[in-house]
Amino acid sequence: MGNEEGYMTIATGQQKYLEMALNLALSIKLKDKKRPIALLHDKNIRIPEEYKKHFDYLIKIKDKDLLKYHMNKLLLLKYSPFEKTMFIDADSLMIKKDINTIWKKLKKYNFTVMGEKLKEGEKCFLDIKKMRDKFRIPYLVDFNAGVMYFDKSNISMKVFKKSREYYDNKKKILGSPFREGLYADEPFISAAMAKYELEPFPYAFRHIIKIRQWWVCAHGKLKEIDIFKENFCLDVGAGHTEHPIIVSFPGLGDKPSLNFSNVYADCSNKLRSFFSMPMMTPSILGIKSI
Image (cartoon, rainbow, N blue to C red):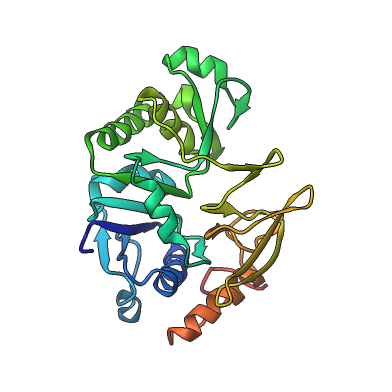
């Protein structure tokens, strides 16, 4: 397969993101043995020798390119070694082997995220109608940037370039601050996708409940998870459950932060044991106690 298709994740700033990236990489190695994994990192990340074998590419961001934390996603196209890339946030795990079905469905896209188009309402504290009028775009895409897909086509280059342009020049208008000095990345990418009228990867609907088969953010509704038996169940209400291939924030409960989680740690340590890697403890993630 060569460099045709592959996965990318990012670890910058704090060492705990490398630990999470390793957990993700191990889960991918377990579920998808064909496609390589690239880690994009900055100079602050120290990568132990025993970790390096689980990443096919270690790519350091040049100091002059470095952005703030998650905004480094805007550098993915520039640094990707693959013709077709699936970006996955470091705090995620691949739970099932069905990822080939998603790669096949992605062939018709140049750039996409899983979500839906919105023409009115409010998202990320933004009035969608006002943003549409301000930026002369037909809609905004409601999505979470924890997983994205792109190739190296001209249209993907335009999306990344426009996203960066919005971030550099329009953050006071389009930006949605969620921490001091930081902005959500989704509004910039959403507006860029709309500018070029790109379609999001659709949800499946079952009796009006949105079912996400590709990936899901698990915020407090997790019922069970076993990465080896491929058991994963997320309660989405009205008697319905989701069984996604990739899960983000597994077991972090109703407080989706980067704090240590028993569920996440248990799943990650089973992976680490299988691959003969050091166990993950609260101290690894910078947490004093569970």
